Image (cartoon, rainbow, N blue to C red):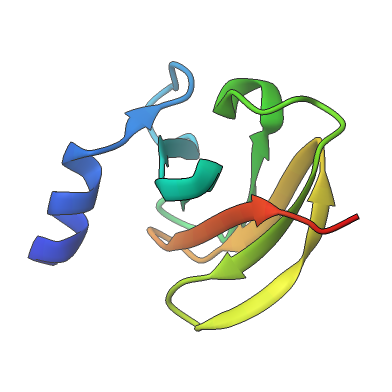
Length: 102
């Protein structure tokens, strides 16, 4: 694991307890009310969809949030309530959530 990811993990909190090999969601606050979300696939054999639930992130359930994939450096959509993204085997997706303009 790269040192930058280890530094990020020190600043985040896991949103729920997980079983070994199960996907994990980590999240932390950013400036201006934004949230960084790390979706981690700990599965040893297949890519999986990892879902972040707004309630677990401290966001209102119906709030629309714009998502930006920080590693791909591109906007990936607007989500409300949950966001589910595919993560490769032992893969990670890192996303910044910002309030979507109405």
